Image (cartoon, rainbow, N blue to C red):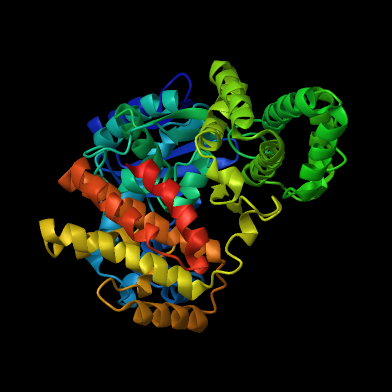
Length: 549
Protein backbone atom coordinates (compact mmCIF):
# COMPACT_ATOMS: atom_id res chain seq x y z
CA UNK A 1 0.00 0.00 0.00
CA UNK A 2 1.27 3.47 -0.89
CA UNK A 3 -0.27 6.83 0.00
CA UNK A 4 0.71 10.44 -0.71
CA UNK A 5 -1.13 13.70 -0.28
CA UNK A 6 -1.49 17.15 1.27
CA UNK A 7 -2.42 17.31 4.95
CA UNK A 8 -4.74 20.26 4.29
CA UNK A 9 -7.00 18.07 2.16
CA UNK A 10 -6.48 14.73 3.93
CA UNK A 11 -5.95 15.08 7.68
CA UNK A 12 -3.27 13.11 9.51
CA UNK A 13 -5.92 12.12 12.03
CA UNK A 14 -7.80 10.29 9.27
CA UNK A 15 -4.58 8.65 8.05
CA UNK A 16 -3.77 7.45 11.56
CA UNK A 17 -7.23 5.92 11.93
CA UNK A 18 -6.94 4.20 8.55
CA UNK A 19 -3.52 2.66 9.26
CA UNK A 20 -4.72 1.45 12.66
CA UNK A 21 -7.94 -0.07 11.32
CA UNK A 22 -6.09 -1.77 8.46
CA UNK A 23 -3.41 -2.99 10.93
CA UNK A 24 -0.72 -1.68 8.62
CA UNK A 25 3.04 -2.09 9.09
CA UNK A 26 5.02 0.69 7.48
CA UNK A 27 6.37 4.24 7.76
CA UNK A 28 4.30 7.43 7.58
CA UNK A 29 6.52 10.39 6.64
CA UNK A 30 5.21 13.91 7.26
CA UNK A 31 6.86 17.03 5.81
CA UNK A 32 6.15 20.67 6.66
CA UNK A 33 8.69 23.21 5.46
CA UNK A 34 12.09 21.98 6.63
CA UNK A 35 10.52 19.68 9.23
CA UNK A 36 10.19 15.95 8.68
CA UNK A 37 8.87 13.34 11.08
CA UNK A 38 8.63 9.62 10.47
CA UNK A 39 6.07 7.53 12.36
CA UNK A 40 6.61 3.77 12.39
CA UNK A 41 3.58 1.47 12.46
CA UNK A 42 3.54 -2.25 13.24
CA UNK A 43 0.19 -4.06 12.93
CA UNK A 44 -1.60 -0.73 13.23
CA UNK A 45 0.16 0.42 16.38
CA UNK A 46 2.84 3.11 16.61
CA UNK A 47 6.19 1.67 17.69
CA UNK A 48 8.67 4.47 16.96
CA UNK A 49 9.02 8.09 15.88
CA UNK A 50 12.01 9.94 14.50
CA UNK A 51 12.86 13.28 12.94
CA UNK A 52 11.69 16.73 14.02
CA UNK A 53 11.26 16.71 17.79
CA UNK A 54 11.07 19.84 19.89
CA UNK A 55 14.17 20.32 22.03
CA UNK A 56 12.20 19.84 25.23
CA UNK A 57 11.01 16.45 23.91
CA UNK A 58 14.46 14.99 23.31
CA UNK A 59 15.08 11.86 25.35
CA UNK A 60 17.96 13.42 27.25
CA UNK A 61 15.94 16.53 28.14
CA UNK A 62 12.98 14.46 29.38
CA UNK A 63 15.17 12.18 31.49
CA UNK A 64 16.97 15.17 32.96
CA UNK A 65 13.69 16.95 33.70
CA UNK A 66 12.43 13.90 35.61
CA UNK A 67 15.82 13.66 37.37
CA UNK A 68 16.23 10.05 36.22
CA UNK A 69 19.79 10.54 34.92
CA UNK A 70 22.60 12.98 35.58
CA UNK A 71 24.26 15.38 33.15
CA UNK A 72 27.40 13.25 33.24
CA UNK A 73 25.43 10.11 32.36
CA UNK A 74 23.72 11.90 29.46
CA UNK A 75 27.03 13.18 28.09
CA UNK A 76 28.67 9.74 28.32
CA UNK A 77 25.67 8.00 26.73
CA UNK A 78 25.56 10.49 23.85
CA UNK A 79 29.25 9.81 23.18
CA UNK A 80 28.73 6.04 23.15
CA UNK A 81 25.56 6.27 21.03
CA UNK A 82 27.41 8.30 18.42
CA UNK A 83 30.58 6.21 18.31
CA UNK A 84 28.80 2.83 18.36
CA UNK A 85 25.79 3.90 16.25
CA UNK A 86 23.29 2.93 18.92
CA UNK A 87 20.07 4.54 20.07
CA UNK A 88 20.46 6.67 23.17
CA UNK A 89 17.84 4.73 25.12
CA UNK A 90 19.67 1.46 24.46
CA UNK A 91 22.89 2.92 25.83
CA UNK A 92 21.10 4.09 29.00
CA UNK A 93 19.87 0.53 29.54
CA UNK A 94 23.21 -1.11 28.78
CA UNK A 95 25.03 1.19 31.19
CA UNK A 96 22.43 0.59 33.90
CA UNK A 97 21.61 4.30 34.18
CA UNK A 98 17.87 3.66 34.10
CA UNK A 99 15.47 0.72 34.40
CA UNK A 100 13.59 -0.70 31.41
CA UNK A 101 10.25 0.23 32.96
CA UNK A 102 11.16 3.87 33.56
CA UNK A 103 12.67 4.23 30.10
CA UNK A 104 9.57 2.80 28.43
CA UNK A 105 7.37 5.21 30.40
CA UNK A 106 9.46 8.16 29.25
CA UNK A 107 9.50 6.98 25.62
CA UNK A 108 5.74 6.52 25.67
CA UNK A 109 5.37 10.08 26.92
CA UNK A 110 7.88 11.38 24.35
CA UNK A 111 6.11 9.68 21.44
CA UNK A 112 2.66 10.76 22.59
CA UNK A 113 3.64 14.41 22.90
CA UNK A 114 5.66 14.46 19.66
CA UNK A 115 3.01 12.72 17.55
CA UNK A 116 0.22 14.86 18.97
CA UNK A 117 2.28 17.88 17.94
CA UNK A 118 2.79 16.55 14.40
CA UNK A 119 -0.91 15.82 14.04
CA UNK A 120 -1.61 19.52 14.51
CA UNK A 121 0.59 20.71 11.61
CA UNK A 122 -1.68 22.81 9.41
CA UNK A 123 0.25 22.60 6.16
CA UNK A 124 2.56 20.08 4.51
CA UNK A 125 2.58 16.74 2.75
CA UNK A 126 2.64 13.10 3.76
CA UNK A 127 3.64 9.78 2.26
CA UNK A 128 3.14 6.22 3.48
CA UNK A 129 4.96 3.07 2.37
CA UNK A 130 4.44 -0.48 3.59
CA UNK A 131 7.30 -2.18 5.38
CA UNK A 132 9.84 -1.17 8.02
CA UNK A 133 12.78 -3.27 6.83
CA UNK A 134 15.97 -2.39 8.63
CA UNK A 135 14.14 -1.02 11.66
CA UNK A 136 15.26 -2.75 14.86
CA UNK A 137 12.96 -2.67 17.88
CA UNK A 138 15.62 -2.47 20.60
CA UNK A 139 12.94 -1.33 23.03
CA UNK A 140 9.41 -2.52 22.42
CA UNK A 141 6.73 0.16 22.48
CA UNK A 142 3.10 0.06 21.46
CA UNK A 143 0.89 3.16 21.22
CA UNK A 144 -2.71 3.26 20.04
CA UNK A 145 -3.04 5.88 17.23
CA UNK A 146 -6.75 6.33 18.00
CA UNK A 147 -5.97 7.62 21.49
CA UNK A 148 -3.29 9.89 20.06
CA UNK A 149 -5.71 11.24 17.49
CA UNK A 150 -8.22 11.98 20.25
CA UNK A 151 -5.48 13.87 22.11
CA UNK A 152 -4.60 15.79 18.96
CA UNK A 153 -8.21 16.87 18.52
CA UNK A 154 -7.90 18.74 21.82
CA UNK A 155 -5.32 20.96 20.19
CA UNK A 156 -8.09 22.61 18.22
CA UNK A 157 -9.50 24.06 21.44
CA UNK A 158 -5.99 24.84 22.70
CA UNK A 159 -5.21 26.75 19.51
CA UNK A 160 -8.38 28.83 19.78
CA UNK A 161 -7.12 30.07 23.14
CA UNK A 162 -3.39 30.10 22.27
CA UNK A 163 -2.90 30.78 18.56
CA UNK A 164 0.88 31.02 19.02
CA UNK A 165 3.64 30.97 21.64
CA UNK A 166 3.77 34.78 21.86
CA UNK A 167 0.51 35.01 23.81
CA UNK A 168 0.83 36.42 27.34
CA UNK A 169 -1.51 35.58 30.23
CA UNK A 170 -2.08 37.15 33.61
CA UNK A 171 -3.72 35.72 36.70
CA UNK A 172 -7.22 37.05 37.28
CA UNK A 173 -8.07 38.79 40.53
CA UNK A 174 -9.09 36.27 43.17
CA UNK A 175 -7.91 33.31 41.08
CA UNK A 176 -5.67 31.80 43.76
CA UNK A 177 -8.48 30.14 45.67
CA UNK A 178 -8.76 26.72 47.24
CA UNK A 179 -9.29 23.86 44.77
CA UNK A 180 -8.39 26.11 41.81
CA UNK A 181 -5.81 23.70 40.55
CA UNK A 182 -4.19 20.55 41.83
CA UNK A 183 -2.26 19.05 38.92
CA UNK A 184 1.49 19.57 39.17
CA UNK A 185 1.65 20.82 35.59
CA UNK A 186 -1.01 23.47 36.20
CA UNK A 187 0.74 24.59 39.38
CA UNK A 188 4.13 24.85 37.69
CA UNK A 189 2.64 26.86 34.86
CA UNK A 190 0.56 29.04 37.21
CA UNK A 191 3.68 30.06 39.13
CA UNK A 192 5.27 31.35 35.92
CA UNK A 193 2.31 33.47 34.78
CA UNK A 194 3.15 37.07 35.60
CA UNK A 195 1.72 39.18 32.79
CA UNK A 196 5.20 39.44 31.25
CA UNK A 197 6.29 35.95 30.19
CA UNK A 198 4.83 34.74 26.91
CA UNK A 199 3.94 31.09 26.34
CA UNK A 200 7.35 30.40 24.78
CA UNK A 201 9.11 31.55 27.96
CA UNK A 202 6.76 29.52 30.15
CA UNK A 203 7.56 26.41 28.09
CA UNK A 204 11.29 27.06 28.39
CA UNK A 205 11.27 27.81 32.12
CA UNK A 206 8.75 25.17 33.22
CA UNK A 207 10.67 22.24 31.72
CA UNK A 208 7.34 20.92 30.41
CA UNK A 209 6.58 20.09 26.80
CA UNK A 210 4.60 22.49 24.63
CA UNK A 211 1.58 20.21 24.72
CA UNK A 212 1.71 19.96 28.52
CA UNK A 213 1.92 23.75 28.90
CA UNK A 214 -0.93 24.32 26.44
CA UNK A 215 -2.99 21.74 28.28
CA UNK A 216 -2.30 23.42 31.64
CA UNK A 217 -3.09 26.91 30.31
CA UNK A 218 -6.34 25.67 28.80
CA UNK A 219 -7.32 24.04 32.09
CA UNK A 220 -6.54 27.24 34.01
CA UNK A 221 -8.53 29.31 31.52
CA UNK A 222 -11.47 26.89 31.83
CA UNK A 223 -11.32 27.42 35.61
CA UNK A 224 -11.46 31.19 35.00
CA UNK A 225 -8.10 31.55 36.76
CA UNK A 226 -6.24 33.28 33.90
CA UNK A 227 -6.96 35.38 30.86
CA UNK A 228 -5.05 36.66 27.85
CA UNK A 229 -3.28 39.94 28.48
CA UNK A 230 -1.69 40.49 25.10
CA UNK A 231 0.89 39.27 22.63
CA UNK A 232 4.63 39.67 22.90
CA UNK A 233 6.17 42.07 20.44
CA UNK A 234 9.17 41.44 18.25
CA UNK A 235 12.36 40.22 19.96
CA UNK A 236 13.85 42.92 22.12
CA UNK A 237 10.68 45.00 22.37
CA UNK A 238 9.59 43.55 25.68
CA UNK A 239 6.68 41.33 26.64
CA UNK A 240 2.98 41.97 26.72
CA UNK A 241 2.60 45.02 24.51
CA UNK A 242 4.38 46.88 21.75
CA UNK A 243 7.10 48.99 23.40
CA UNK A 244 5.73 52.17 21.78
CA UNK A 245 2.38 51.60 23.51
CA UNK A 246 4.06 51.24 26.91
CA UNK A 247 6.30 54.26 26.41
CA UNK A 248 3.41 56.32 25.05
CA UNK A 249 1.16 55.56 28.01
CA UNK A 250 3.75 56.38 30.65
CA UNK A 251 4.72 59.62 28.90
CA UNK A 252 1.03 60.62 28.81
CA UNK A 253 0.95 60.09 32.59
CA UNK A 254 4.16 62.04 33.12
CA UNK A 255 2.75 64.87 30.96
CA UNK A 256 -0.45 64.91 33.04
CA UNK A 257 1.46 65.03 36.34
CA UNK A 258 3.80 67.75 35.07
CA UNK A 259 0.82 69.79 33.83
CA UNK A 260 -0.83 69.48 37.25
CA UNK A 261 2.31 70.75 38.95
CA UNK A 262 2.71 73.62 36.48
CA UNK A 263 -0.83 74.84 37.20
CA UNK A 264 0.07 75.16 40.87
CA UNK A 265 3.76 76.13 40.76
CA UNK A 266 4.36 77.38 37.24
CA UNK A 267 5.97 75.79 34.17
CA UNK A 268 9.55 76.63 35.12
CA UNK A 269 9.30 74.85 38.48
CA UNK A 270 7.42 71.88 36.98
CA UNK A 271 9.89 71.44 34.14
CA UNK A 272 12.82 71.65 36.55
CA UNK A 273 11.27 68.89 38.67
CA UNK A 274 10.79 66.71 35.60
CA UNK A 275 14.38 67.16 34.40
CA UNK A 276 15.66 66.26 37.86
CA UNK A 277 13.44 63.16 37.99
CA UNK A 278 14.62 62.00 34.55
CA UNK A 279 18.29 62.42 35.41
CA UNK A 280 17.94 60.45 38.65
CA UNK A 281 15.76 57.64 37.30
CA UNK A 282 16.96 54.11 36.56
CA UNK A 283 17.77 53.86 32.82
CA UNK A 284 18.28 57.64 32.78
CA UNK A 285 20.50 57.17 29.70
CA UNK A 286 17.34 56.27 27.80
CA UNK A 287 15.08 58.99 29.19
CA UNK A 288 17.14 62.09 30.01
CA UNK A 289 17.40 64.25 26.90
CA UNK A 290 14.84 62.19 24.99
CA UNK A 291 11.95 63.42 27.15
CA UNK A 292 11.74 67.19 26.68
CA UNK A 293 9.51 69.19 29.07
CA UNK A 294 6.88 71.09 27.11
CA UNK A 295 6.93 68.75 24.11
CA UNK A 296 3.88 66.60 23.41
CA UNK A 297 3.79 62.98 24.65
CA UNK A 298 3.83 61.87 20.99
CA UNK A 299 7.07 63.75 20.27
CA UNK A 300 8.70 62.41 23.41
CA UNK A 301 7.53 58.88 22.64
CA UNK A 302 9.18 59.01 19.23
CA UNK A 303 12.51 60.09 20.70
CA UNK A 304 12.50 57.50 23.51
CA UNK A 305 11.62 54.66 21.13
CA UNK A 306 14.35 55.77 18.71
CA UNK A 307 16.85 55.74 21.57
CA UNK A 308 15.67 52.27 22.63
CA UNK A 309 16.31 50.96 19.12
CA UNK A 310 19.76 52.54 18.97
CA UNK A 311 20.78 51.54 22.50
CA UNK A 312 22.50 48.39 21.22
CA UNK A 313 21.26 46.20 24.07
CA UNK A 314 17.74 44.88 24.71
CA UNK A 315 15.78 46.70 27.41
CA UNK A 316 13.24 44.64 29.31
CA UNK A 317 9.72 45.93 29.81
CA UNK A 318 9.99 45.58 33.58
CA UNK A 319 13.16 47.68 33.72
CA UNK A 320 11.67 50.43 31.56
CA UNK A 321 8.41 50.48 33.53
CA UNK A 322 10.38 50.70 36.79
CA UNK A 323 12.22 53.73 35.39
CA UNK A 324 8.98 55.47 34.39
CA UNK A 325 7.40 54.71 37.77
CA UNK A 326 10.43 56.16 39.51
CA UNK A 327 10.02 59.38 37.47
CA UNK A 328 6.32 59.59 38.35
CA UNK A 329 7.01 58.93 42.01
CA UNK A 330 9.78 61.55 42.09
CA UNK A 331 7.45 64.19 40.61
CA UNK A 332 4.64 63.36 43.03
CA UNK A 333 7.00 63.37 46.00
CA UNK A 334 8.25 66.83 45.03
CA UNK A 335 4.62 67.97 44.77
CA UNK A 336 3.93 66.46 48.20
CA UNK A 337 6.75 68.43 49.83
CA UNK A 338 5.34 71.71 48.44
CA UNK A 339 1.57 71.20 48.33
CA UNK A 340 0.87 68.30 50.68
CA UNK A 341 -0.67 64.84 50.34
CA UNK A 342 -4.19 66.05 49.47
CA UNK A 343 -2.93 67.68 46.26
CA UNK A 344 -0.95 64.54 45.37
CA UNK A 345 -3.92 62.30 46.04
CA UNK A 346 -6.18 64.40 43.81
CA UNK A 347 -3.70 63.99 40.94
CA UNK A 348 -3.56 60.23 41.52
CA UNK A 349 -7.36 59.92 41.63
CA UNK A 350 -7.54 61.62 38.24
CA UNK A 351 -4.92 59.22 36.89
CA UNK A 352 -6.85 56.24 38.27
CA UNK A 353 -10.14 57.41 36.75
CA UNK A 354 -8.47 57.98 33.38
CA UNK A 355 -6.74 54.57 33.47
CA UNK A 356 -9.98 52.76 34.26
CA UNK A 357 -11.66 54.24 31.18
CA UNK A 358 -8.99 53.32 28.64
CA UNK A 359 -9.60 50.47 26.18
CA UNK A 360 -7.62 48.16 23.87
CA UNK A 361 -3.82 47.83 24.21
CA UNK A 362 -3.35 51.11 26.07
CA UNK A 363 -6.08 50.03 28.48
CA UNK A 364 -4.19 46.83 29.22
CA UNK A 365 -1.04 48.79 30.02
CA UNK A 366 -3.02 51.18 32.22
CA UNK A 367 -4.67 48.28 34.03
CA UNK A 368 -1.26 46.87 34.95
CA UNK A 369 -0.22 50.27 36.41
CA UNK A 370 -3.42 50.82 38.42
CA UNK A 371 -2.13 48.96 41.53
CA UNK A 372 0.86 51.34 41.57
CA UNK A 373 -1.40 54.41 41.46
CA UNK A 374 -3.74 53.01 44.10
CA UNK A 375 -0.86 52.17 46.42
CA UNK A 376 0.43 55.74 46.19
CA UNK A 377 -3.03 57.26 46.66
CA UNK A 378 -3.66 55.20 49.77
CA UNK A 379 -0.46 55.68 51.71
CA UNK A 380 0.93 59.07 52.74
CA UNK A 381 3.90 57.35 54.37
CA UNK A 382 5.39 56.53 50.97
CA UNK A 383 5.92 60.25 50.32
CA UNK A 384 7.00 61.21 53.81
CA UNK A 385 9.89 58.75 53.74
CA UNK A 386 8.48 56.47 56.46
CA UNK A 387 7.89 53.57 54.07
CA UNK A 388 9.43 52.03 50.96
CA UNK A 389 7.83 51.78 47.56
CA UNK A 390 8.02 48.84 45.15
CA UNK A 391 8.05 50.01 41.53
CA UNK A 392 7.94 46.52 40.05
CA UNK A 393 11.63 46.62 39.25
CA UNK A 394 12.69 46.52 42.87
CA UNK A 395 12.19 48.41 46.10
CA UNK A 396 12.80 52.15 46.20
CA UNK A 397 13.23 53.92 49.51
CA UNK A 398 10.75 56.76 49.55
CA UNK A 399 13.23 59.18 51.06
CA UNK A 400 16.10 58.21 48.76
CA UNK A 401 16.92 59.01 45.16
CA UNK A 402 14.69 57.27 42.64
CA UNK A 403 17.82 55.93 40.97
CA UNK A 404 18.04 53.23 43.59
CA UNK A 405 16.14 50.66 41.54
CA UNK A 406 15.96 46.92 41.16
CA UNK A 407 19.60 45.97 41.22
CA UNK A 408 20.44 48.23 44.17
CA UNK A 409 17.61 47.34 46.56
CA UNK A 410 19.43 44.25 47.89
CA UNK A 411 22.82 45.93 47.95
CA UNK A 412 23.13 45.79 51.74
CA UNK A 413 21.42 42.41 52.10
CA UNK A 414 23.78 39.44 51.88
CA UNK A 415 22.95 36.02 50.46
CA UNK A 416 23.12 34.49 53.94
CA UNK A 417 20.51 37.00 55.18
CA UNK A 418 18.18 36.12 52.29
CA UNK A 419 18.50 32.38 52.98
CA UNK A 420 17.92 32.93 56.70
CA UNK A 421 14.92 35.20 56.11
CA UNK A 422 13.05 32.87 53.76
CA UNK A 423 14.04 29.78 55.75
CA UNK A 424 12.25 31.21 58.76
CA UNK A 425 9.13 32.14 56.76
CA UNK A 426 8.91 28.72 55.07
CA UNK A 427 9.37 27.04 58.45
CA UNK A 428 6.43 29.03 59.79
CA UNK A 429 4.17 27.86 56.96
CA UNK A 430 5.18 24.19 57.18
CA UNK A 431 4.75 24.13 60.95
CA UNK A 432 1.28 25.67 60.62
CA UNK A 433 0.29 23.06 58.03
CA UNK A 434 1.84 20.21 60.03
CA UNK A 435 -0.70 20.69 62.80
CA UNK A 436 -3.45 19.87 60.27
CA UNK A 437 -1.99 17.35 57.82
CA UNK A 438 0.99 15.97 59.74
CA UNK A 439 4.14 14.77 58.01
CA UNK A 440 2.52 15.02 54.58
CA UNK A 441 3.54 18.66 54.50
CA UNK A 442 7.21 17.70 54.22
CA UNK A 443 6.60 15.45 51.22
CA UNK A 444 4.57 18.29 49.69
CA UNK A 445 7.36 20.78 50.31
CA UNK A 446 9.96 18.46 48.80
CA UNK A 447 7.85 17.98 45.68
CA UNK A 448 7.40 21.73 45.28
CA UNK A 449 11.14 22.30 45.56
CA UNK A 450 11.99 19.47 43.17
CA UNK A 451 9.71 21.05 40.56
CA UNK A 452 11.41 24.41 40.91
CA UNK A 453 13.85 25.70 38.30
CA UNK A 454 16.12 26.57 41.24
CA UNK A 455 16.24 23.04 42.66
CA UNK A 456 19.63 22.05 41.31
CA UNK A 457 21.08 25.48 41.92
CA UNK A 458 20.36 25.69 45.64
CA UNK A 459 16.92 24.46 46.81
CA UNK A 460 18.09 20.84 46.84
CA UNK A 461 20.20 21.77 49.86
CA UNK A 462 17.37 23.27 51.91
CA UNK A 463 16.08 21.24 54.88
CA UNK A 464 13.07 22.66 56.62
CA UNK A 465 13.81 20.75 59.87
CA UNK A 466 17.39 21.99 60.11
CA UNK A 467 18.47 25.16 61.84
CA UNK A 468 18.73 28.34 59.83
CA UNK A 469 22.51 28.50 60.13
CA UNK A 470 22.82 24.89 58.95
CA UNK A 471 20.79 25.71 55.84
CA UNK A 472 22.86 28.81 55.17
CA UNK A 473 26.14 26.90 55.42
CA UNK A 474 24.96 23.92 53.37
CA UNK A 475 23.53 26.08 50.54
CA UNK A 476 26.61 28.30 50.41
CA UNK A 477 28.88 25.25 50.40
CA UNK A 478 26.91 23.66 47.57
CA UNK A 479 27.10 26.83 45.48
CA UNK A 480 30.84 27.06 46.03
CA UNK A 481 31.41 23.39 45.12
CA UNK A 482 29.25 23.53 41.99
CA UNK A 483 30.68 26.84 40.85
CA UNK A 484 27.23 28.45 40.54
CA UNK A 485 27.05 32.21 40.09
CA UNK A 486 23.75 33.31 41.59
CA UNK A 487 22.43 36.85 41.86
CA UNK A 488 20.64 37.76 45.08
CA UNK A 489 17.39 38.08 43.13
CA UNK A 490 17.71 34.39 42.19
CA UNK A 491 17.56 33.43 45.88
CA UNK A 492 14.52 35.66 46.36
CA UNK A 493 12.76 34.28 43.27
CA UNK A 494 13.48 30.66 44.19
CA UNK A 495 12.27 30.95 47.77
CA UNK A 496 9.23 33.01 46.77
CA UNK A 497 8.19 30.37 44.24
CA UNK A 498 8.32 27.76 46.99
CA UNK A 499 6.42 29.98 49.43
CA UNK A 500 3.68 30.83 46.92
CA UNK A 501 3.23 27.17 45.97
CA UNK A 502 3.13 26.12 49.62
CA UNK A 503 0.50 28.71 50.58
CA UNK A 504 -1.50 27.85 47.47
CA UNK A 505 -1.48 24.20 48.48
CA UNK A 506 -2.60 25.18 51.99
CA UNK A 507 -5.57 26.96 50.41
CA UNK A 508 -6.38 23.90 48.32
CA UNK A 509 -6.06 21.40 51.15
CA UNK A 510 -7.24 23.36 54.18
CA UNK A 511 -9.25 26.22 52.76
CA UNK A 512 -8.83 29.96 52.41
CA UNK A 513 -9.43 30.66 56.10
CA UNK A 514 -6.44 28.55 57.12
CA UNK A 515 -4.17 30.10 54.50
CA UNK A 516 -5.29 33.59 55.44
CA UNK A 517 -4.48 32.91 59.10
CA UNK A 518 -1.00 31.73 58.12
CA UNK A 519 -0.43 34.85 56.02
CA UNK A 520 -1.49 37.04 58.97
CA UNK A 521 1.04 35.28 61.18
CA UNK A 522 3.75 35.89 58.61
CA UNK A 523 2.78 39.57 58.44
CA UNK A 524 2.96 39.77 62.23
CA UNK A 525 6.42 38.22 62.14
CA UNK A 526 7.55 40.70 59.49
CA UNK A 527 6.20 43.65 61.46
CA UNK A 528 8.44 42.75 64.40
CA UNK A 529 11.66 42.68 62.37
CA UNK A 530 13.60 45.88 62.98
CA UNK A 531 16.92 45.12 61.27
CA UNK A 532 17.50 47.32 58.21
CA UNK A 533 19.22 44.39 56.47
CA UNK A 534 15.87 42.65 56.03
CA UNK A 535 13.86 45.74 55.03
CA UNK A 536 14.11 45.19 51.22
CA UNK A 537 13.09 41.54 51.67
CA UNK A 538 10.09 42.51 53.78
CA UNK A 539 8.92 45.13 51.30
CA UNK A 540 9.35 42.64 48.47
CA UNK A 541 7.43 39.87 50.25
CA UNK A 542 4.42 41.84 51.51
CA UNK A 543 2.91 42.51 48.03
CA UNK A 544 3.41 38.83 47.18
CA UNK A 545 1.46 37.77 50.28
CA UNK A 546 -1.36 40.16 49.41
CA UNK A 547 -1.60 38.69 45.91
CA UNK A 548 -1.98 35.18 47.29
CA UNK A 549 -4.82 35.94 49.69
